[in-house]
Image (cartoon, rainbow, N blue to C red; front, side, top):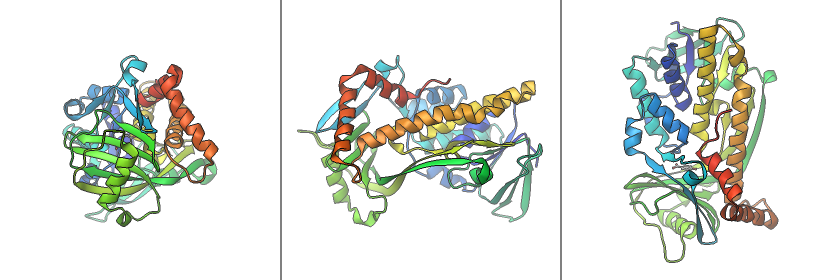
Length: 392
Ligand code: PHB
């Protein structure tokens, strides 16, 4: 097989890239190790920054999102049984975020890609990236059904294959530096069949720590509680989960509306950045290159930002034969990534109870929260970051 851009991974980075390249008249092939059902059903976070919403519409992929997404003008912060509304739209000249889960975005992107006749090969194994420092890189893989070795010859290879994929590892270790922070807490996430309890997302630090109230649809709600990342989900009965959620999200005279818990699971939290994000004719994007804890709702948005930068660089390369923007891909992306890393770390440390921190540091986090309540500059900073920083 031969194409211009070989893309490993049909997550947000790979799929958005394929659509952006198609718009520029550049061909690509996507390969993906999971099958289509797994890709479309994995439950992940769900907040789209303002410009991602606009991009979905521009690409002709925004119809269902506009209909089924929940558009929020603000978020609520809560501590000491008090709530504080952060007027995101008012602080950012009218920008709003959409709560529209990642797997719904992926369904729309996959359907759009297949309708446009663009190839996605699902369920491939043994993916190997080679000859990346030559002008004829290639991707070897096997299809699960035939087991036959196949090769995609291309001009450029993109590793959009997540944290555990082969993309990042294909950059020789001597050519990359990795920065990492593991947090000593995880999130227990649930889906519950219950009506909406509150009109916007609530980020709380109360009782034994963090809780988040989010939504999926008028009758399915998503909620998270800070927990031990090594804990066993079996130790969390439904009664214990509701008890903790009520303690952390309750205010005087108000409690959450409960319902049957239809799914639950524990995730760990990490911050991670790989520098640089390119080697020869390989470019890595999304979780392959960086991870943020979900507290700032930045993961998917950062992946889309990477591939927007990459698509512009590839467009310029094919139109003008200049490698200038491609050579600057990593540096351009990392300026935005480190700011999102900072914001996600800030939201995470401010909103969680960390047993390894002193009482002094805990007090500082509450002062940070109170600063958002009392300082317009602090509130604006949070709002600008939450809704998505402008591109350089
Ligand atoms: C979610 O709805 O899954 C969600 C929302 C906001 C976050 C993280 C997760 O910051």
